[in-house]
Amino acid sequence: MLLSACASEAKHSAAITDDFGDSISVGAVPARIVSLNTTTTEIIYAVGAGAKVVGRTAYDIFPAEVKNVPDLGPGLHPNVEAVLAMHPDLVLLYASETNREAARQLRAAGVRTASFRIDRISDFARVTRLLGQLTGDTLAASVTVDSVNATLQRVRSATATLPHPKVFWPFWESPIMSVGGGSFVNEIIETAGGKNIFAELPAPSPTVSFEELLRRDPDVIVTGARTQAKLAGDTRWRTLRAVREGHFLIVDSTIATGPGPRVGAGAESVARLLHPGVRF
Image (cartoon, rainbow, N blue to C red; front, side, top):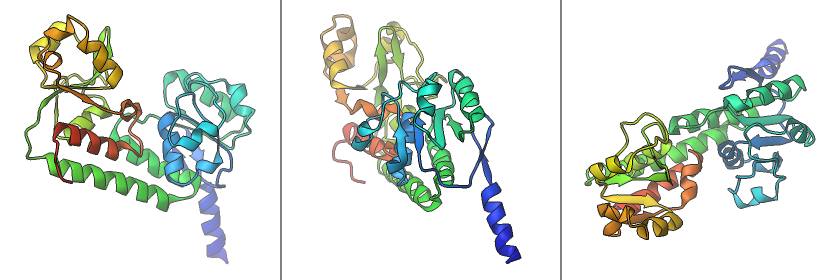
């Protein structure tokens, strides 16, 4: 009985630390979750706690049923009153400085609040396991992480010995913002058997000059259908060999929204574009 009591006390006194350095207790399983981070929202659904989500950001579209959840805004600098009106017992925020005050206010109101910065694939694995602890299903969290990691490794192995084409993946066209080495999208490109021409730039989305883009001369441009049409019809952009020769690879742009549970499938789809006929 004494051992049982000690185990129970340890369970309810356990805590994790979020990316603001705040401590969050791991005890009662939450019944009402507000997730104001598209990646944590997807993770919550992936680990089987989606039915408990009562608030989301305006950008949450996966899985499809999340669209039935009340939209509480963009997620950055949230309306604290609107969040509290949902009576959550767990709030998930992106760990941006613009959200630090909201996190403080929510915690002061007695609501468990966890803020995470999920920018790299390794962040996905770490945060998924932490959310498994918070939602009371560490097994589902581990299965989710293992499944994504297995897919990534399968893609990496299949493309390792193939030629790696030079890839330009624009986030924006004016000014030109490219995928940089600090973005998880760079990890997707490398896993899929490509070579990001701006990988050495440490920022996630550095601004680059058109002259430098011309000099680096990418083999392919990975983008969405709308951007392809815009670039293909622009006289200046047609001076770029990849544009002139129509070397566009059209991807689902939501791949770039965050390194969530779909990141393995995203790498697989990019690999199929870069290496038609590749077998995994």
